[in-house]
Amino acid sequence: MKKKLTMLLAFVSVTCALYAQTNFKAPVDSVLMQKGIFGAMPESVNVMQTLAVWGTVKGRIADNELSEYDGYRVRIYFDNSQDAREASSAILSRFEEAHPDIPAYRTFDSPNFKVTVGDYRTRSEALATLRTIQPEYPSAFIVREKFKYPSLPGDYVSGADSLKVQPVL
Image (cartoon, rainbow, N blue to C red; front, side):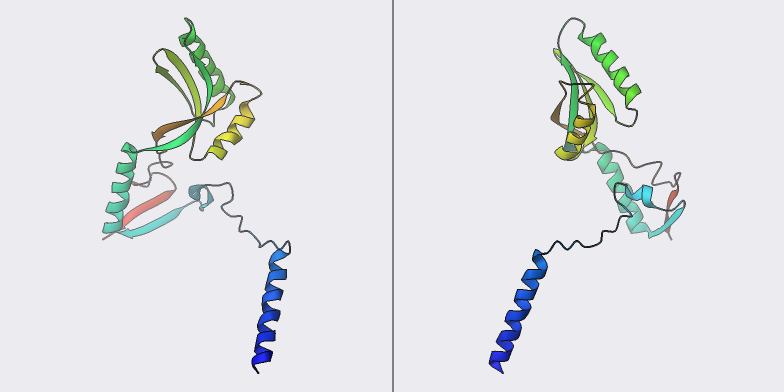
């Protein structure tokens, strides 16, 4: 009996090891792939929640408006020459016209004018944008910066968007 159990366990472990080495790929649920949670929701969603949850959500949103996090941006311009102010403004305008879906920022950190684009949580996200815009801006590079959390689409708390959140009394 002990010999049969040992052989059975050996057979199961060898089978599992062979199965794990195959190129088996589990099916992936693609509903949220490359989408935010709000983009994947149906036209109208009505969320009912208790007053405690309602207050917590409103508090977290208010806290996050003040918070900053470490992230990445792509710097497309950096100069301190005499005409850097006008040049940075022109580059910012040109970038915003060509890429309206990517946020762009112009800053002055004495004595340099800088134009950075994007709000990325990971370096790999910033790298994807860098590769996209590098033909236009060959000297572009990734920088680490602190910036505010992006706001939720629409007026999340009052329900002005298609997502309506209301407290249950």
